[in-house]
Image (cartoon, rainbow, N blue to C red; front, side, top):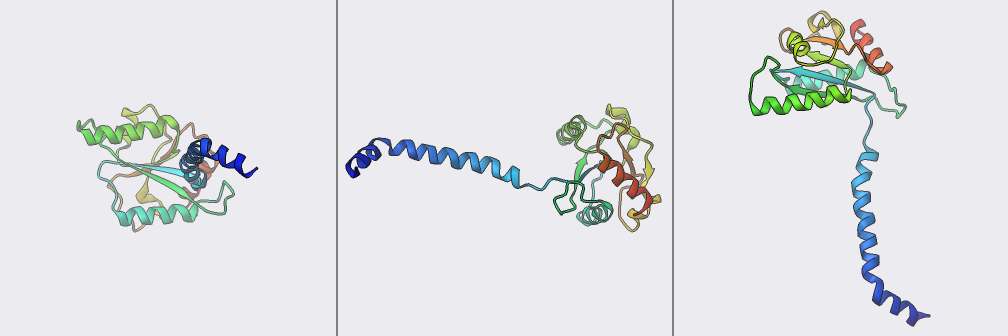
Amino acid sequence: MKAKWKNWWWYHWWHVLLAVLAVAVILYSFIPGLLEAKPDSSVAVVSFSGLSDESLTMLEERFRSVAEDTNGDGKILVRISIYQVDLSGAANAANYQEAARLDADLVGKLSSVFLIEDQDGFLNNTAVELEQGIACTELPLFEGMELPEGMVISIRSDCGSQADRELYNRILSGH
């Protein structure tokens, strides 16, 4: 029996090695995606002047304070996507790249709640319908934050997520 096993191993060791490598590659590819935390809500910040790291940190903390754990994983996670894009039509490579990222978010309906610096430019250059924006300076959630001048918060009219709708309402009410 031992000789039979040695003979089999002699001719098939490379098959075993390839199978082990294939399994390792598959696990390496899929495990990170399976372990990644799923956000409870998604917010897109569309601004041509961007946000400072301090403002982004404060924004994350404040959104987390009004969000709820809607997916039941025990964590409150609000994904904030920053799109530093000039929607007035300025042509440069960086602007095109950011505009493409924003377009992918809009087409994929990844975000429902939007903080927008130039609401008119956003509405004129995208096919997304938003509810009437409310100035961030009027909302208690944004007090003391350095946000770009004229930034408004709004939600998609075709918002499909009840969690995002509830988050938006809590932002407006301040709790």
